[in-house]
Amino acid sequence: MKPDTIIELNHGAGGSLMDTFLNSLLSIYKTKSIDNGIGVDELDDGATIPLSGDLTLIVSSDSHTVDPIFFPGGDIGVLAAAGTINDVTMMGGKPIAITCALLIEEGTIYSDVHKVLTSFARTCEEHNVAVIAGDTKVLPKGQVDSLYISTTGLGIRISPNVISDSNVEVGDKIIITGFPGMHGASLIAGREGINLKTTLESDVAPLVDLLLPLVKEGAIHAMKDPTRGGTGSALNEFAEKSNVGLLLNEDEIPIHPEVNGVCELLGIDIFSLSSEGKAIIAVSAEEAEEVLTQITNHPLGKDAKIIGEATDKYRGKVVLRTSIGGHRLLRKPLGEPIPRVC
Image (tube, rainbow, N blue to C red; front, side, top):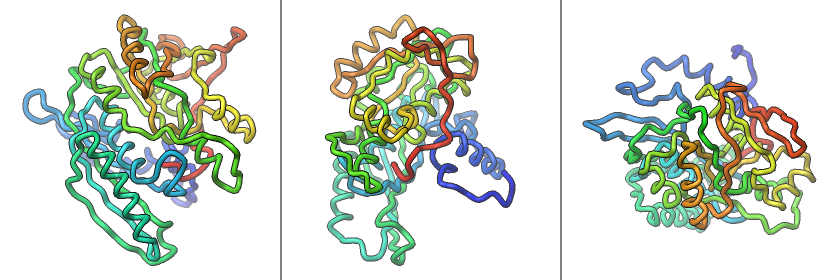
């Protein structure tokens, strides 16, 4: 990027502009991985640090600035905990510990901070994740919008194989564990003065219990939770990093009618909206149906579908097969259509 480039919201929104921004910054770092583990250059959900024997530590870092801090179906506390826990899980790890750093605006009501941290603590406790360290700063009014949370998650890899965005193989089936875009749509529906009448709630949830049993079996090659940038961004990262094409059946992608309604009303691409309780999975073709059955038997995966496969055509691209038999590219979005969703 040019030195005089003005940083925009989309530079941090999980799309192609953010990719350009991050790639320009990564050149500043010299040592970016440990002992040939996955490091910052891979731009995966986290990093891996090989320890003794087959033991691998997984580390994931995140910051959470959602607006408002209380939203339909959750708050910034459960969002921060679930988002970090899920990032460790996406790498094939069992989350074991988390840190929590707070940036609080002067004038914030104590009960709001207490409620947020109670949600954070409860989510961690329910999944046996210890809160082991943190930091708290209070900044002058106007320098922080209410409350931000920064986290680092730690886990131990339990998958027999390394699970990474770059490990999708030709022939793999692609599974989505439920309706995409519910988190983003629920925020839009009650924000920016829109106040749509809807029962939509965020899908924010840790996916540990849903996915870790599958991780142990070794059938999963790649996983990603489609947060910032949505499903379109996550799928394109699979295709680009693994150098495969993804051919998806548009009619097989499960779409929530209220999410679709919000998108049609406001002219938003549903594939650019974030999810906070879904995963996109690349799994070997031979085991795909069994994996899908296990997922749909869990409450968090009851709407899961096989939506397509990886192919040696269209390498680096995602192609949707439409209901009338045509094909169209699903491009990586510039970013999230609304700011501060996570």
